[in-house]
Length: 621
Image (cartoon, rainbow, N blue to C red):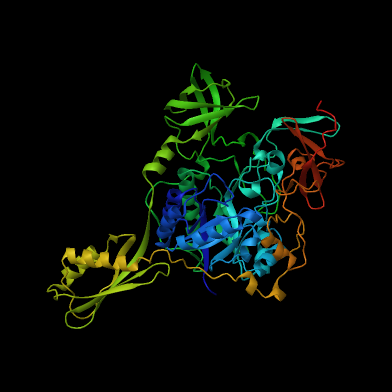
């Protein structure tokens, strides 16, 4: 059975963060160009992307361009030019949502179907695979059993799954709430994150259930301890969310997940391997729990529901560190929790949630054991019994900034005697990287034992991104007399020979749509909310007998669901009919700044749907 390559895919807001992710162990990074990326605040020039691809390819790592917004008709040529620039910059693949790209006249480049394509069924996966996509990015809401089912349905397509980061409450690509409220489309990279806002929740009768709560805000995903079961289910690419996150966040999370993947691979008896070369060496120790998060959840990966709402974490308040025992002035004594990521220290940023639900911050000026003297920003005063969180870990942030790892590729050297005074020094790097060799001449050494020791010492060093180890010396014949300067020069020359050429991506050609066997195209099961915004995409659907409705961004249909969610407010509040005998799944009303939404419950599918509310119902009690 062939070895299965596993890929850790990291976000890159810019080239510097992309390079940092690779240094910390990423096998690939995804990054946006100047436009058409689903995070409008994370655009980059193709000059910067070319720098990133050059660096990534040194380690066999890949760079994927996110071109994953819907594209309006007047933008198709601009989008095509982006693809041309991406190929020139050395990108290895495009992550796309808009199927119109398949109809464009573009050079060969691998295409990945974005999670915005709403890939959560075998039927949707077969449809996209039949169009020539080589990798599909599944919805975050799936269980490992569902991942397996989809993987088995598309055996020639790679499966990519999110494993860490922020969770949208709605199925990706099917959220129109931001567009409905503000004309800023999530499918265009302009989401206002209305799911993180505060809502009043009431019954249609007017009975108030909640006031001012972020009831649509989910905890962050964390599946570091589920990577193996996901790989066994068929996933090969593990994606970290966060193209708006800073370099510290990316370094910390990537290093933690890279270490976890390496542990899986080392125990797999050769079943799995990393998809790139080298690994991070030295540097800080990662602590995912200490960086930005809204509390963590495994979501639905185990096939069971849980309490997924972020509660007071809608904007992230950090790592729980303890509870206040007593307060005297600006000094508080804490009952510290066990297993903190790092000890509480001077300069840490702390915060707490008041009884009214407001978050107040403070700075730990001095820490002596469990006693903290602090200076507080404006806000509520803490009281005994209050839980304290660490929103800024001073010592960890300094370690991440000042002590990043270096990525190095191990390589073994073999010295051969090739007659008279001729020798060959060859190198073979780990992970399938091409080998290299140098032929040279040297005078024979007089003392074999002493020379062997000297060669081991002088050649077993680092050069460039390689760490060399001598694996074999000639068993017969003389050893070469090599001054250390000559040994260093040979080692450096070998390292240069093993460097890959710039911007030559190792891509598989995707099949242009006009060369796809139409008899093998599998029409999609999804027939509504197809996000079709240009004639190129429309023609693809037309070719399989589907006349798609216009994208919500171009023509707002009153029948369109604003959100469909695996998450359910009724379940979260203990009001699900399956939890509470006799409970009816009646709609609930959500109100924010006078705007009303209605949550209706599709219990047959165990899903919640958000739709507009006409506003004619009663006000909250």
